Amino acid sequence: MEEEDMQQQESSPKRIKRRQDDGFRSRSRSRGIVTLSDDILEYIFSYLSIKLAIKIGTLSSRFRNSWIYSRNLDFDEEFAEGQSREEFIRIVDRVLKLHMGRKVCRFRLFFDPSEKVLQVDEWIRFAAMKGVEEVDLDFSAGSERILIYKIPDFLLDCGSVMVLKLTLCEFMPPLISFNGFGSLTTLSLSRVDVTDQILHSVFQTCLLLENLDLNKCLELDNLRISARNLRRFKKLKITDCKNLYCLKIDAPTLHSLHYSGNGKLMFSFGSTSNLKDAMLDFTVSMFRGFGETLYMENLPFKLVHVKILTVSSIFLQGLSPKYVNGELKAIQFCLHNLKEFQLLMETVSYCNPYDIALFLKNCPWLERIFIDLKGFSFYHGIYWELHAKQPLAQLGCKFQHLKSVKLNGFKFEELEMLLVKFVLEKAIVLETLFLVPDKNQYKITYTGDMQIGISREVQMGSSRIGKDLGKVWPELGNALGPDCEIEIGSIVAGPVLGERDQTSSPALEVDEVEAEDRENQGSADHGDQV
Image 1 (tube, rainbow, N blue to C red):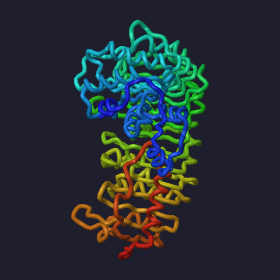
Image 2: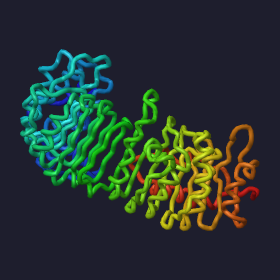
Image 3: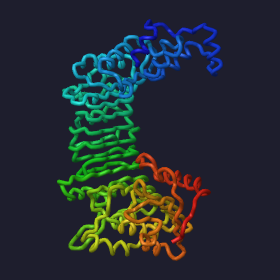
Image 4: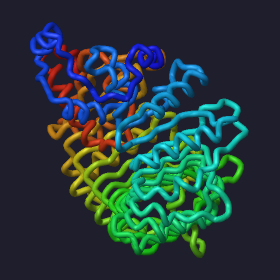
């Protein structure tokens, strides 16, 4: 489609001409379009994506050549959709040949470079010569690729690049240097054959670096993030680097750390006094067992400055009480800065409510809790019966600041109920408790006036929740006391909550549901009280 649009437009490299057609000008005024000078129009069109600029060029002869000044050359996956490989190549060649802009701000490419390496080199060289600031090269377009594209040396000498994103490629041997990337602020590498030595060069030469994202970089094994000489380094994200066994972080300015991968990873922290947001999503191989959780015992002492913490249940399992000199002892630590805690339950973990309660006890200033129970059920085993059930009932603590709790994927199982009972007994200033079941189930809210309202009735097993609620909730009712009222509300149209967005705070989602409840309050049809 883009190729046909281009063929309908003028190919001569002329500046945008003002059409003197009175009819067109009158129609423009009637639509509220202010007559602008050619220079201003050229400036506006230069910041449009190349795909949008080509489409606008078909609307009027005055905009016919607007795309030749585009600063954002996005030949990405969306641009390539619906085009054959040959069509894609012809369009890219034509755009770059006729491009008249003095600068390129962004260059994105989604392409299989097989048998076209030299052509791809020329495309990248064009962007580098135009002073490109953001480069996004994704070579995963081929379904069965054998060729791994090698990043040309001239790109590494492009001092204008501020954002570099690479997917499925590698750097030219021998050991490359990033001396030419003096302006680099963001580096994102996915399925790139990058080594520890290359990243060491990045931290030594890219002094303006702020963000580093490493995904499925299998050459990494012993990675050291040495960023003491960086004054702006804020965010580090590492996901699915399966061969990584040791991670050493010495970054005084680091603000956000997100790790997802092998639970056997050995962490070593230097200075991380500014670390406020941490995500440790550990996974454990079914074939390696759970002994590798021992690597996590020292981690809480490195997270004392964190305010928002997201972990998997494997992390809490690694902190569970262990036998020391014949006595079962828990690790003593205190996360006095932690305000928000998010727990992702892994299906292969043996984490129990007591493990969760022990961790929460060490977070005295906690205000918000989110627990994702989707696909997980607590294990009723010998350890729970002998070492966890009674200690949970006897655990002495009070949550003086806890205001909001949300459990996603709630199934009303026995141990889930015990966890809710524990929270309600200990959280003396709790304002909101949200229990959000899986799809096609119901939502329950607990408010400060000791009322629980159910805003959705559904089938659960062979019985109706609205009819058998008293059988499901006897322990919870006892925990809340004789003044507690349980109300069954009318069915709410649409989903109660969407899928959890890990980038957002549970507190924000709570506000959204409260707004929904207020909106439906006037039309709620209350049934029998239990």
